[in-house]
Length: 148
Image (cartoon, rainbow, N blue to C red; front, side, top):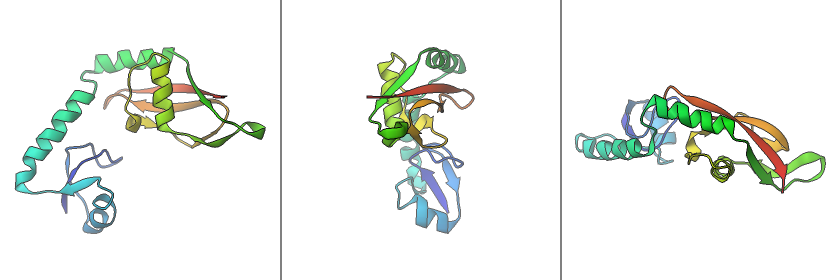
């Protein structure tokens, strides 16, 4: 089945990409979650709008992405959360918390969907997260989780 991605899906593509997937995957996962829409000949206008919006949000050149990476890695990012006994958190640190902390530290605005957390952060201390800035550039940012 041919689809147009409306959101980024790891392993498939970015918004505006036309992909070919099996019918069951499209019908049971991508379409119900709103991650894709059906492809038609008239959908080219929609594809152009999605790609234009993506170009506005993305970092355009590799040099700019490297500059953003260097600024992210040079500044300490501190996330303040509620913690209980044994340095365990009430809940987990989310990508939204991380992007807010990056902004509070004076860093550039980062889309929360570009932040990749390996394992859920559920304890105090220093944790590493990956931020995808460009197709070829990603930054590894150390997050310091401290009690509020």
